[in-house]
Length: 307
Length: 307
Image (cartoon, rainbow over all chains, first blue to last red; front, side, top):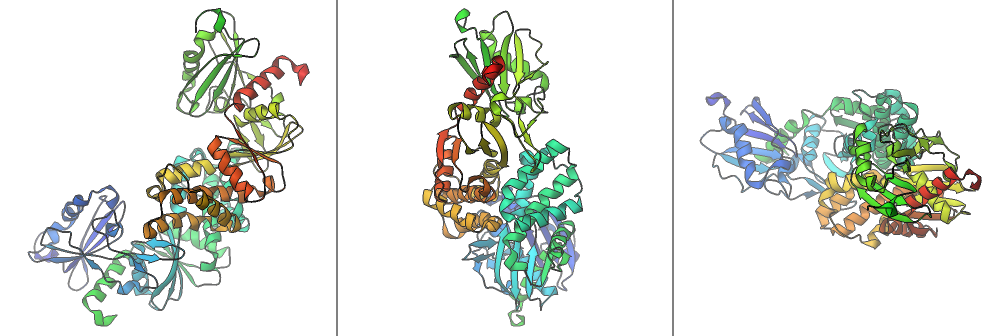
């Protein structure tokens, strides 16, 4: 990673709560180098951001300032520097990155992509707006709903390149807490999910969503009384929570064109759950979306006439 | 605690996951001494139970064997010795304690109260059956529903001194996990609850229980965007979860005589939530119920003709 060949035209940065990833992008748009660390914003004091970034990208810097375009929780109130939310409706590809005053090193020109906010019902996102920009770069005419499952799953209504509205469900965080820290942890330690039990749990919860509180403890009770396999119990927990999410987001997917972008196994679970409701969802890997979105936003930033 | 005056006729023990409490009961039924520690079964290996108990009660023992009647998780599979569940319908006052083989000290004669199980929907309880026996000792003619709010809230249908059916909700554990370990923890750190916000959240959730997943993240988003007070956010979290529980347990309380026995502040919240639904619930302190239940079960054990 030495010599002029790795000098970056600009640097793309995905900085979330638990991870930091960076890419050196050449003048021709190619990826010249990449690096990552676990220096997520959640574990950093404000004055620790710049050293954490330099540690990853210093070899890519020339003597002049290199633009760094970052997205994610790095722009939160508790991040490096706050990039105020932009209210929806908004076009992710045209979000104006905030020129941060923070870096002291003159070789860094830091820009932070703002998150999106919605007044009613109140909701926010940070990082997903960039994934959406990446999705729209590949599917410019998409009119429908994009689901981004994860810790905080986002359901996003897209039309004419614009986020019209969105809704967050805490499904991933609930699954993590319940499967690792609640009384259910004794019953759900399995590497795999029983796919039939998953489907049954989704269907049961969608048909009687008000029974969620009862269904969760029943997973434990059934394992205690009947020795239910962990792969079945884990599938019931996942299916119950995803079923509850689908019940809460029905207006988002019922009769809509739906795409699900996430980690492949998780996106597949959502697509299966939706298929059982008669919705043919297109599942895709969310892995490449953040970099694609940063490239799209960078292009709009440098050539405004294109947007 | 020395001398024959403190010799116990029998010893009552409440042994849960996180606590151990013991009472020395005289031949006249009076409490001669009490003691407690944090040696809950959750932190004990199997051979650590006897020393933990002796540490509390040794001064109360004579040279002959003293009966010890224990309830709670001490009788679980992971406890000192498993006391198999008794299936409902069952009369808590007539549960036959299991004579344990475990203690090596000849001064201890250990009896463990069995928990209750229900085949369909699958459910279990351990410890609450003794609280129910205590409640029924004071309200022998009660015909209705007893709610025992806590980590795992129990709703219990009682008739003619019998548990007919019951249902568990994980409301307390969900509240603890979400308020201390999820993204909501940043917004709900308050000593008090805004009681109006609590009532609104209960009503909103009961009217649209399928929106639970969305409501939870909205608590955080509203705090982020609008600076909502922590006492309001905390009340919304509590009200949303209790509202979801009431939605799941509607067949238990709708049109029924309801008593709520719990920590006084929590029992009061449940009574308020039920009152808003037109159900006049009788709130009482669950504190004395376990000892009262152990005394009732001990009386039935020693004088079977009374039951």
